[in-house]
Image (cartoon, rainbow, N blue to C red; front, top):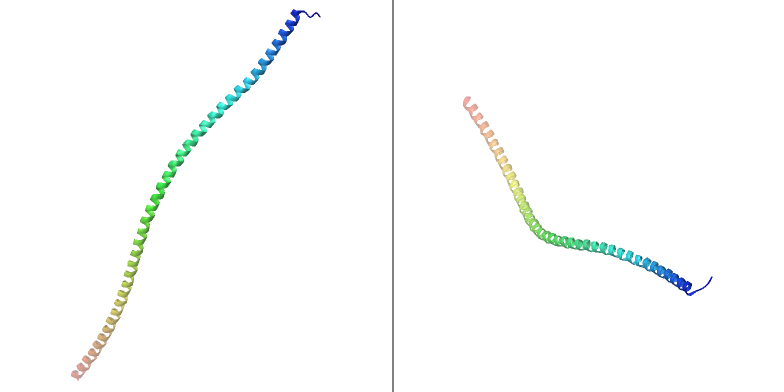
Length: 145
């Protein structure tokens, strides 16, 4: 095989072409990887953006819930105060009812004593009536003889 200038140039051009193709393949391979990385990064960014939006909505919802909880606590405090007043009124009503029951007990006791005195008086009256009746019978027998 003769190494002429044309053959050497053809070999150099062939080797250059192989090197250019090899470099092109390597560059294509790395660019393809970079493209995949950018695509993955784009998808990750979209997922992160969606997560951030969801987190923002969750924070807004939590803020509203905390506001409602604060209002509920204020209402509970107000209702507790009102219930405390109602319990105080209820305790006063119970004290009044207790006093009325005590008064009623005293009245019933007085009524029983009065009824007992009246029964005693009726018994005495019946005894006097019996005595008067016996006296009338004796007087009647005396006049009848």
